[in-house]
Amino acid sequence: MIGGASIDPDSTTPGFAQAVNIFPNQAAGSDVRASDNFALPAPPATPTLTPQADRAFGAINLFDPNFRQPYVSQTNFTLQHEVLRNTVIEAGYVSNRAIKQVLDQNVNQTRVYGGFLNDFRELQAFQANATPTSAGNVLTRMFGSPTAAINAIGATPVRQGSLGAAANTIDTSNFTRYANAGVSQFYLRNFPQFTNVILTTNAGRTYYDSFQFSLRRQVGALRGAVNYTWSKTIDNASADGNGTTGNFDNYNLSLSRGLSDIDRPHTINWSSSYVLPIGKGKLIGGNMPDWLDRIGAGWEVGSLGFWTSGQPLNISSGLTTGPNNAVNSNADFSGTDRSIGKVERFGGGVRFFTPEQLALFSVPAAGSVGNSGRNSFRGPGFFNTDLSIVKRFRLAERKFITFRSEAYNLLNTVNFLAPSLSLQTPQTFGVISGTPTGASNQSGARILQFALRFDF
Image 1 (tube, rainbow, N blue to C red):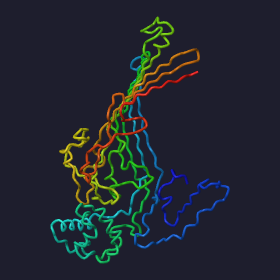
Image 2: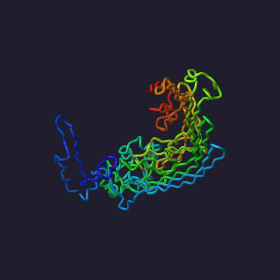
Image 3: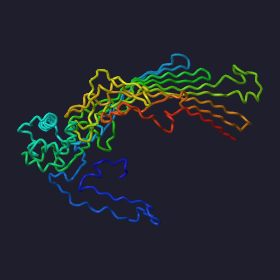
Image 4: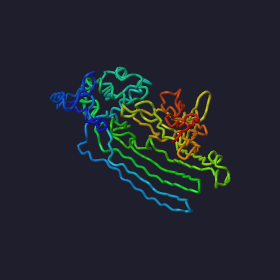
């Protein structure tokens, strides 16, 4: 199967899937062809239909039996009008609704709320203040004492409130002790035969709404266009279905609903070109001789650029205080204004949050995924403009030399990547350490380049 069309269940269903890779010409003198009837994969072993509740099978990937074809609904209402001669404006509403999109859910995520969370909090209180745990504390009964339970989980995860990590440690490394506490193998997992059961579902959703405006005008040798988009994109996962999606809680997908990673509420781009009015029959040098016209006429100046809002920022606690051991929770935020943050230079670096703003973030309590919300803050914006000057010199009837000069990032604007966003690295939290890179020099220093081309 072509790799791009393959998803997890194709290769991770135990006992039913097996693959053999064949590489033509992998070794010298070996020209492997499909007609050579090369060896087929060996038949898989007889699957174990009722595996033991010992997590030995690791992860299994399955399709939802009610899986349906994903689809996208699009709405577009646009008005266009020529307000002046050669001047056109266009305004419209554009909307997309991605329904029943592919989303992977771990339906074997540990169940941490209720009894386990209360027992874990009692261990935290014992660790901090020597407060005795209750007689019904399952974790204490499992290990014989609160101290033994804390040592089994790890003192640091208990102190930090890493509930998801604690539950995973208990269920994968200490499930043989469940009998000591009188609980079954289903104490924390729906399917104790596996560590993870990834179900490919139709639970993905994306919503995009935008107002789009454009102005185009041409006056003689001057042409220009300006486009503006005001939009909002919301989803519950900004990743495709080829792999496990990082849900904060696989049993409550609404916690992952927020601004998409690609959300940019304001975007403006523009382009213009102008042929200078120099040469025979032009405003300047209308009677110049032919040799001078070849040099002075036909110079064209062009410019393009864009400005866009910054990317959404997801402030991470750096810990798995929520139920999903594979995803760190968000930070708690005690402020009221989420539009905080701007690029500031301090000492020998660049920061985005002030010390007063940093103090508004904290690690959530065990059992919480953080109240700051997914992608609730916004990073630095992006601005860039380029300039080009082009002239085609006529040497003879069929011979030309084209001169081209280009300036990338004409104004030498410095753009920045998102800052570090994990509370577990306080020395770098809120600090910007890089700029975007790319072949188009989207954020580097100003670059000037020149080119000559001879056409004959």
